[in-house]
Length: 486
Image (cartoon, rainbow, N blue to C red; front, side, top):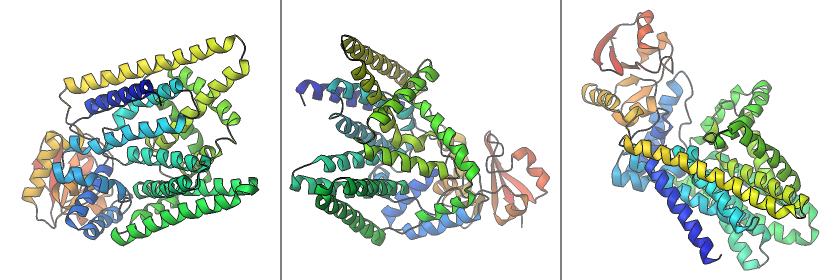
């Protein structure tokens, strides 16, 4: 790369890091997946991983709904360990590993597309992600989605480099790196296994199409699987299981849900453009060019196509809708194919208009980058103006409630609460989420939120209808805590 390109890329990465860090808050959304990750990180540091699984299994099995697996894959908790050791349960600082992985993702994405685009197109494409307010705002979560985005992209990059590398030693190193990266993705999210399946299916197709390359294809594939298997075997010796318990949700699968999920997930790709004016128009343009790019590059980028299809197939069949964040690994491929479609049309038209159309494309993408960066900057300004507002499970009313429970209840108490994993993280008390009056007496204390209505709880205004022996022991503006009299 030329020095000028390196300078521009470095400027993009540093600007994105500055905006991302400025958007981070001192709180968190109420979804308590983050609490499970932090408890797993804590259990790694004090050697109590099996104890964590026992307590979390109680929470999952005894709650009215399955709110998660007995344990998430251990990769993200392991990533959190250094920050947890240094800072404890500090939500602002615990978000820094996610921000760092996002910046590395931008770098991996640049190298993935730079041999397919001009350098100008590559920098503009990366900038669409670097300054995207929705993605930067998501970094304000302690979740595994952003690290998985990095590992998914890195795995595709390394697999693509392996396929195109002609030097044997270099190819073997890349193949080993691919196996390690795919394991890393699987170690962070079980969906990482889709990467291995996609690559093996791609290699099988190449094996049938390229007779003269069969020996190379077999050796590369065996090395990738061997490295993945070795690392997986080592991880199973160190870390306990529990991730597969989430597969029980497949009991809710139906063909009706499958076909409903197809338009649902197709439409939420538009959130990438949600802060731009005329979102429907812009999204429509990208969809049209996406299909043009997909058709024109189908065989050249078959690995990208296979991975995208298999990943979507899993999303469509998954009974629990997870929203925009589960599409993150496909966003780079969606944007890539859309911009390839634009380039294909420009090449088709050709002639004297080619240069003008190329400049029009650059201007269009540059305008998008400017608008995205402006909106991201606005997010950052509001957040800093509000002194990185503390919200959700870390606000003063929540912390006051946790403190009361921790100081005034026996250590073996069971707390009924709508976000039981957050309650256990903050109070070290077993907790379950119940929506049935008859089951509430299985707990010792009942903590109700005055703001969330019927979200995995019976609202405070309706709890009297259960005719339970309750004694109010604590109350503030946000919560009320009852002792359940036996």
